[in-house]
Image 1: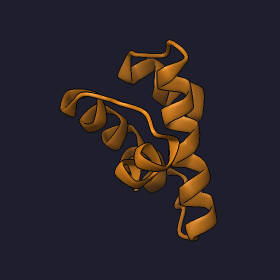
Image 2 (image 1 turned 30 degrees about the vertical axis):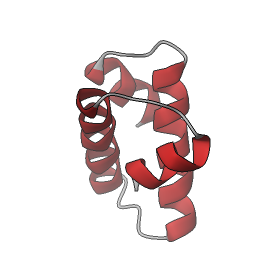
Image 3 (image 1 turned 120 degrees about the vertical axis):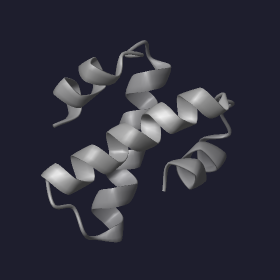
Length: 66
């Protein structure tokens, strides 16, 4: 999900950055029990947007988005 949202946003992230965003996405999806495509896409956009706007720490991303 993260990779498709990155492609849609036409942004360049390194493999490490994508992996970090994917871990955050996976964790939040599990905790919040997100199942619909709409919710998953919204969360992926929010993770990427927050990362691009300076929230680079995994723990901080989790706290912000949970």
